[in-house]
Image (cartoon, rainbow, N blue to C red; front, side, top):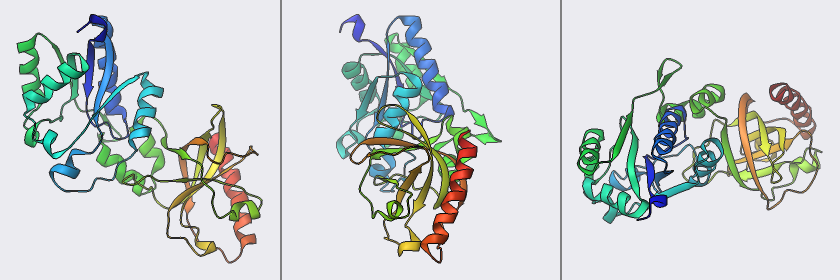
Length: 298
């Protein structure tokens, strides 16, 4: 294998890519710079608990959004997805590391203190250190990171998002919670009320935050950033569709974004979703929400 192909490999699922992950990723980049080689991330296309324990896991972000954050915030372009199947789940922990060395040129590993890998999760940081010592490789194990009175974890962030505590969640994430996707055609209720919205769906198995109205900002295809107000829910004033969407009214934009890729970042929870007696009553509230969202954006 050529020297240019060798990498320091950061291992983990990285759901949310929170401040704990950030410490790990920064160390991986530092170690790569010390050795004059590249830095890469090896993550999983499916959460291991889904296959191993048969437990559905609702994720903070889709795989696409995980990659977006890794590239945008950490400049990591090489992101490898380990295909998790019944066969790969049965892989011995040493075989798992051998695979990482063979396929991705790993010359060293960086992991979190609680990272487990291989069959039944028998691989752990101590065994990783042993493997790296045997093979003359670097090994860094990152201790737990604490913030807001506790250890930062994806589980804790999920709980905050479900409660609508978006500002606390963003503190633990180290960035605004986001949702990206292709803008879809909606029911055009907003356009009829003079508040056209861009509509995004939450991917399957991705966490839907507390239903309600949020101050947001949207990153448009040209890279510009626009303040907005986003309703997460089922549009109860118009009968409710049953399908949860994120409908964002951009405060300072007019144009056609249908079928374009947009990222919406959630900044502050403004109010719960509610049913209004009439469209006019809803319009008046949207104006108030827009003013509140502009204050947050400014």
